[in-house]
Length: 374
Image (cartoon, rainbow, N blue to C red):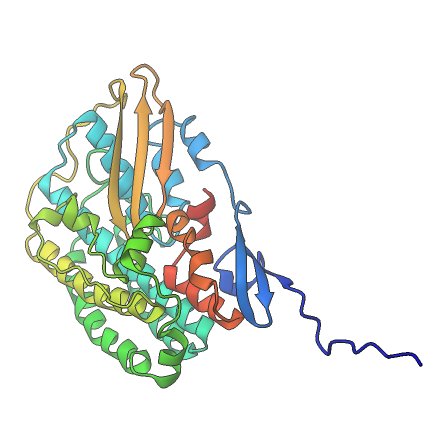
């Protein structure tokens, strides 16, 4: 008599699934190799490099002014911030004094850019999870900011909005009044975002206790910006190492206490309000005077090296540049990009969660692949 071997009903082997690089919820050409146990993520591998353009090497073969155009192409939804970070690094290396008016306008532009970047983040993050209306609302306000940038420098995405030593031009007549009008609009619209999401039962189920990470672990992984502050770490370059005119501004740094996706959402939502608060102070206290300092016609920094960081919408973006003192281009150009640093935490965040939570967690750290790959 033969005994029939009972076969298992299900194949229990680990399943490997590629999410991306063409998946719309990976926010660019990001590939995540998921190792699944059923619908739960057992492990993952992050594959980057699909958008690599060699910006750092290109910058070493361009003169100091031409590089500003290349910084636009990294975080292309926050180009004004990368312009500012690079220009201030060169100014630090050359000991250039930037006029107070230029520092105030830079601060206003940087905070307008923060709001625009957060609007894009909120709209796409909410849509990934299934909330379509918020996407339309957030992009409505983002368009108003792009109109202000277009009036200031003629561009809506890659701005080329800064110059070494200050600004390419002064603000247009009436522009300051329009900025204040936008602040009034934005403050009222943040309330609409909260009404749609903050206490929404579905939103809470998709974000509470998803991707919890402690402050110490977030620091160890190199996280920065709102993703780090959501874990309760009050690190903000604007407060800790003030630049532009932030040392003259009064604002708060919002932090979370649970370190989950919901806290990272709340931190950015409060940053909307703090940004309008800073913009109002910058416009109402805007000093008179020149908008660019004394800069030599041929920019050739003395031999040396320096590092300088600012707080971009994604987190701390730093520039390390080396000058040999002879040529008109950098000897070495290196960028510490917040999207790249925050992305290192993604495998830790998604481990143990469902496949459906992966897109929520990608959105919660707010990456731009142009800045990751460079």
